[in-house]
Length: 104
Image 1 (tube, rainbow, N blue to C red):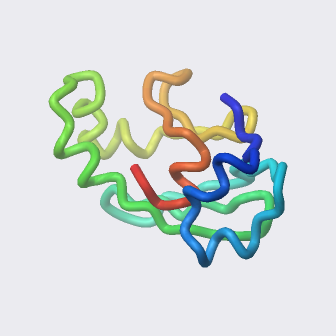
Image 2 (cartoon, rainbow, N blue to C red; image 1 turned 180 degrees about the horizontal axis):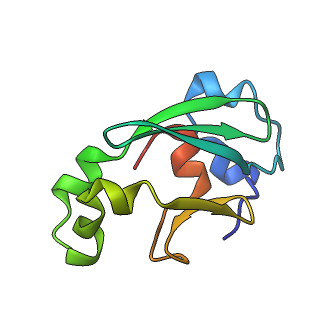
C-alpha cells in the first residue's frame, strides 16, 4: 500500500492535519491498541494518535467478509504489518491516509 502523500493528495487532508504534514510525508502506523467495542487507538510515525471507531463501517457493510468482524473476538485480532493495520493477512485493511484522517 502506498503511504506517500504527494501534493495532489494533501489538499484532501483536513486543515488541522495539513499543518502537521509536509509535502512527500510518509505516514505509517507505528502501533494500535484495542480500547473497547470497535474502537482502536492508532499511533502514527509522526507522533499523532487517533481513536477510530470501526463500528459504523462494519454495521453498514453488506459484504459478509467484512461483517464477520462484528464478532469482537475476530475484530480484536488485528496486527500491523509494513505500517498497515490489517486483519487476517489483509482480509480487512484500510488505506493509512483514511485512518489518519478518520475517514473509514
